[in-house]
Image (tube, rainbow, N blue to C red; front, side, top):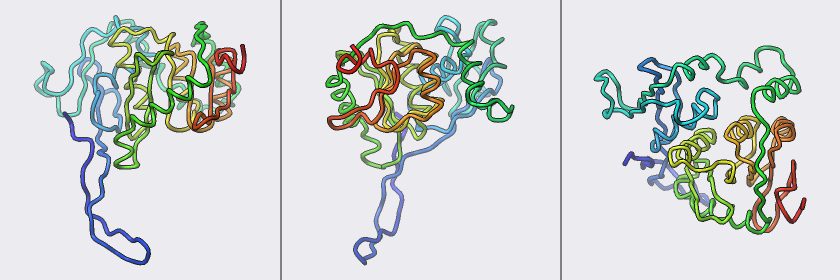
Length: 272
């Protein structure tokens, strides 16, 4: 298993006293995604779940529409290509998926093409279908599930340096969670794992350890996940996108409280 935590010598100041000690630090390494042997994307990430990260990234970026468009996927030395270096995932896609490569990172392109937020959301909504799932959950159950996410953040507890995302069924029987230095990577890892396990994303809830940004809402919407809950707040663009795509956003879900921002009908205590 890849090393995810290292010890690093530091000088610690506490109450006027200085001591030399070791601190536990989360490992950050690059992962290169190749398509048919050609470099495509480099992600800075916490080691682990490399195939899941690649699958989730390609899916939530709109490059693959389902798992059948991935012909093969190899990580590092398991690949047949002797030129593959460590920390490389090589993916072979169908021709249809390869043709979508030019449409990735829509949200990055918007920042440099003079589109306003309203226009950006409008353009995305023409490409991403509205979420049709009627999944519902009680506020109490949602808060219990958020508590499980907090308990699962073992790397964060040791290092204070990672984000966490979970995908869970309403009853909590299926609970996938991942930590990473990047919240986007953690989201892609759990979505990739769910796809590889052939789980129904329309019947799952996504839980975040941080805020709900536009990009995180977009990844959830592209995956067809109906409820996205976080311990912190959503941004205005995340709210605009969620409202248009029928995505339920829940913020400040911690302890005994939460706020439902969009489509509250899925949280039965608040919207039916």
